[in-house]
Amino acid sequence: MAVGIGILITFLVVDPIDIRSPAALTFLELTLALVLFTDAARIDVGRIRRQYRWPARMLLIGLPLAMVLGAVVAGWILAIPFGAALLLGVILAPTDAALAEPVLESEVLPVRVRQTLNIESGLNDGLALPVLFIAIGLIESEAGSRSVSSSVLLVVSLVGIGVAGGALLGLAGAWVISRATEHGWMDELHQKIAAVALALGTFAAVEVLGGSGFVAAFVAGAVLGARVRPKCEYLYDFADTEGRALVLIAFVFLGAGPIYQLIREGVPWQAWVVSLVALFVVRPLAIAVSLIGEKLLLSTVLFFGWFGPRGLATAVFLLVAFEEMTDISPLVADITFLTVALSVLLHGVSAMPASQWLAGRLEMRDRREMPEMGEAFNHPTR
Image (tube, rainbow, N blue to C red; front, side, top):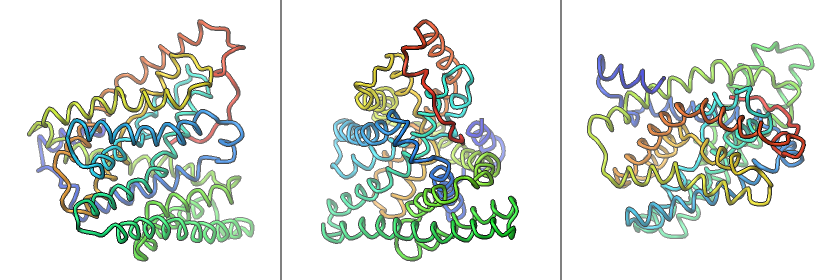
């Protein structure tokens, strides 16, 4: 809906938005930083290790495999160097919890199925970030604009400073929020404000220091969630209110800018092929491989493979690459935004029918023997 509103506004009222302009780019980057922070905070990593083999396998096996398969497909179809192919594979791999909301909140599906997608979509964009910077370093070394050693140093500094800065600031913020709450110095409103300030402050501080603010925001959110989890209701409330509003505005920007341009100008056939293969082949195959041996119904595996909508992280990953480099092929941008547009349409249309289909398939089996019907902890959704 938000993307459609953006397209309609541009068609009827205003000129297309340049999302690479300083104002739009800053808004999109800060929105993704907040999303990474809140997603990392709301997922209890300890419970994933103890109770959730499926999302752990999807993140540790499926996500890397999807990036590699995406790179192979892009390199073969587009005949581009490995660095650029890997960049495209990374950009198209993360999924968006906001676009999967109809599935995550569908009462017809078992809790364990919904929570698997909830956990995976909440963590895969943060885990993909280091590989994004590796791809950028590879491109620059292949182009000769950086030596191999300086490219490695770039990646290490971006990721290393991001992890260290995020961990330190996350610990400091958790200590301040926890102490202030225990002494009654903060009510829930000010806890929410403090958490948002911590996310944005961490992003800005680490960017100034030369690290990745996105990595830092993700790590700080994970640290805050681990340290003050029993007191995190204010953060979940933010993710469900102000955070949702920011994400919707971001999708309006995408509709009013690059997606409108695609509709008006069209895209090459290569973009269509790469986008469709990424949606219909790469992710489903990677997820299927990652879940081998888990004794899930084929219907469940297909459902997990299909529901990986691409959204905000995919778009902003591309913008991060544009910030670091200036010689990215326009075809990479076309593929990225076409994939987002197709995902918004196809996953939005298929969410409820596919949920009903899987629920019907599960009803036909003996529930006592189905791992899909096992108990699961309810992580907050976004």
